[in-house]
Image (cartoon, rainbow, N blue to C red):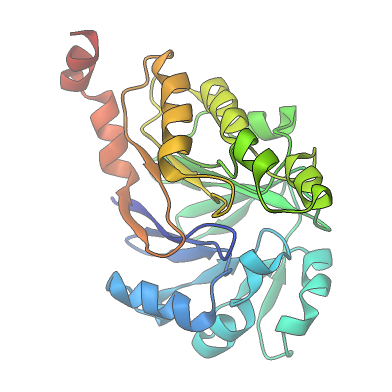
Length: 278
């Protein structure tokens, strides 16, 4: 039974991730335009009307700008916290099917269990999520937009087979970058975004022998580079003997076809174990 993840786009200009099994497809965030979400789904041969649910993590436009258009056009229910929905009122016109959730209360959507948990970010009610395939037990963690990985965040992300983690900025590039000091302070603050260094530290804390893949997401165009983010996190994970894939999500093109079932099987295979010990 397949469990696949497609990062439709991730970065400062828009974020959206599709998770699918053989029976259900859900979107986490709609920070691209409705038209862009549709275009990127079709580029993966995924009909937009096959999406069963849209889950919104917080109200910032790079996570919500396409939510209303996509939900109305394809009649997709929107799962959102009440406070977040109120903050997104300008994107909604009352024709959407809104379903409210609360942090720490799991939602069962077909074979997928979505578990939202609170994060430290400058939004009204921000969450990250884990998504577990109930039939296989495989678990995906999606954790971006947080300035501090709290004990509760680390607890929620334990035991993931696939981790999608924010690596927003390089500390030096942020200090030297074009933003005003107030913006730099916000990004680097407790309720801002994770740096490459912080992402590397969190990844090593969450590492376990069955971790099958890591995806770095929400990179800043101004204050980061994909190669820099990848090298920083890879170097830290290598000390933990991590030898599975590490990918960097793009703002402009989907990172598609991450098959959690296949990735998890590869990590658990005796052949890979022999390779790691050679």
